[in-house]
Image 1 (cartoon, rainbow, N blue to C red):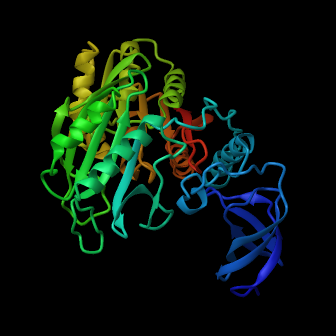
Image 2: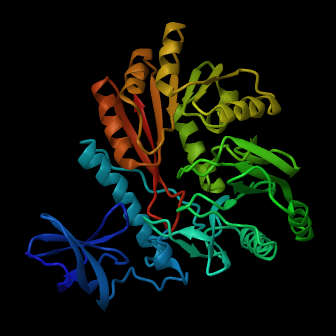
Image 3: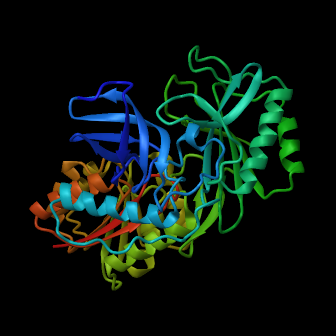
Length: 449
């Protein structure tokens, strides 16, 4: 039996969905971060459970052929890019395997996944950044929360963000420091500035700068606007989001415009999309276009269908298919997102779209009562997957095709297995890498009645 603080040699033979290497020592599974398949390591046991252990990499004895030198100075402390020590080829293989294993083991499917789809762009792809703002030893710190903690690791130059974000974050940090504006303290729930929130519309270049406040106003805001304007970047919106709650939820319900417009505008699959501070939007624009094109291909639209888009957000998925269907119905529980969806439809001249503000299961039941029977259902649920009521309602409405977009292969496999019990056959699974260098992977699954 391994003991805490034991030092052992280990051969890494697999990767978990969290990016940890796995090896076996005397039959016991040992999980070690920052390792690669093929590594032979010396590790220190830091936590012991009855059936597995966690270790810490102490020394690399024989490196894997897939291992590369991490190119971020704070990568190990931050933990966001948990796969930055792997070659991108090895990362893609691991993500494909993660999806395949989920559908094999959890779903009980024997269908082989399609090849993983990627743009090949691994840096600068994120169109959104949330930087916690704190004070340490009298200095303003802007960066990211370390993995599984609320310790802020200072980092303005995150390689996943576009270069404009680093410049803006630096200007905001200097402004807060020089004007002595208090930063938020989670322990006391005091202080004003909680987060810096940046968005960029990649197709148009437009940028939104938003400060999340534990209050209503930002002192000396005019001076901040001067500094941002002097940057000569395409900043089109500067706003304040009010969040006075003691919560881990980043945004509050009210956003006030300091300067410019309440939204920025992007183009996705030919559709103009207005993005407010609260709008959900895929963070990787170019990869999202590939994913939505695949979803449209799976839907196999002819122009006569009723398309139901559940968990529709600002309507982007459905609106990219609206011109190929008779009627589009989108459902989303966030009121601001539904308003954005309606505006997006109107500004794109799409008149066959209807949007309902409700949870997916409630809306599905209402549509059932109206006698609406969609031909195709697209679902893009949160990580927890679809509720049982949603899957049951889909089955009762009897669409001939269900297109499932998922950010969690495990819950996607579970939900597809439930739909199989309800009379649907899984035809195809395609993994998509929307988050290179991180452990996250998305997939599109097609089921037919």
